[in-house]
Image (cartoon, rainbow, N blue to C red):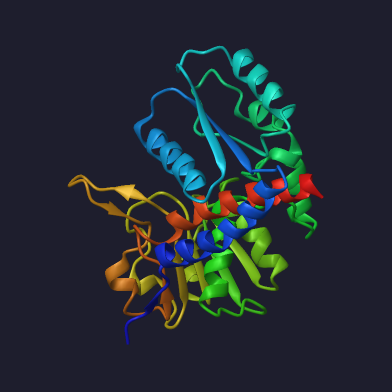
Length: 283
């Protein structure tokens, strides 16, 4: 029997509708949630992501703006702008679109964002709070995945969860969230010796490596929940994930598609974090 599909587009729309009432309530008190996105350079994919983030904010009544710099801008200029935004009471979230040009110290830029406005959840202090089980801001993609588990009625306690990918953006925070939810977690990566051994025993499998169709149906346990975080463009221009959807959907119990799976949830949880930041400020 083919897997049930977790529709990220539908869940994202449902959540965004519920956010609108919170935005309106804050605006009525003079605290309209505000997000600024900083883009350095002209990476076409980043431009699309930034446009989508700004539009998503505006669609539910939030304030949002993007600040664009040339790729050769001095890092000090961007740091000065972040300091200015940190001090602006009308801005509740600051996001620097990654990747940054090679002459930037990415860690230094992310750490410059105020912990209270780090709606991407990348600041070391917010990562530490998540590790301790008391998250303040959760990295948006793993946060979105947790909402998808909730929507799919997935009980994580006691389950074997395997994450393929160990990035700071997805793999590591995903592992922490699953540990906090009571799962037994294994993180696999490029140095893992027997990937198949791990993926075959996973009740929950999260693929986040950026390799097209790397996870195939014969690599997963019958009835597994398969979450595909990857988004890759094939030579013919079509998008696909890290999971070979056609073969895996015949084995899994629940699966996310690409596109229309995790992607829409990432931006949705960015909105959630920004609204949360504004609510904390208004208390």
